[in-house]
Length: 111
Length: 115
Image (cartoon, rainbow over all chains, first blue to last red; front, side, top):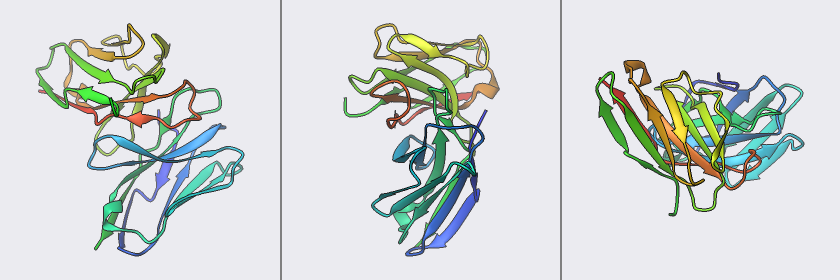
């Protein structure tokens, strides 16, 4: 079963604009991670945020976490055509030892 | 190796046949995960190994699916009597330690097509 739900399902923006994707989950967590997937192949880890953190930055990425609402957001600033990909959030579940993924957001950045 | 390696990258098999999918994790990573991904969906957990043992196999859909990791490194996912519904991308990931406060490194996947 999939715990996370991302929205929107698809997002199309112009190069240079910011892209925001949201993720909601159901159970308590230790951490939440965001991954990127190009062309349906392997996933690449972007950022991990722990349950006691509220915000984290990595380059053009900004992730927020609101454990009271069981939600997270991923912001990509100054988007580039190369950012075109699917983005997934994944949670570990409080007692789990496995990553549980959402269905993902398909991001298309037009140049 | 430099990353997680999965072979073959593509596999086409006939319904009812047996297939094996291989995963070479990053050297030294004790944790290894198998996921299955259908088109337009997120990866779905199948099984997690810590060392040689399957710590969690709750995601295996039925007894046609089995995975091994006999020496704590390479893992093989085995599917018996394949069905068309088994067609999907099969992803393997490894991480340095068990538990998920560290990132998982994914291979490029094996795309299985059952005809």
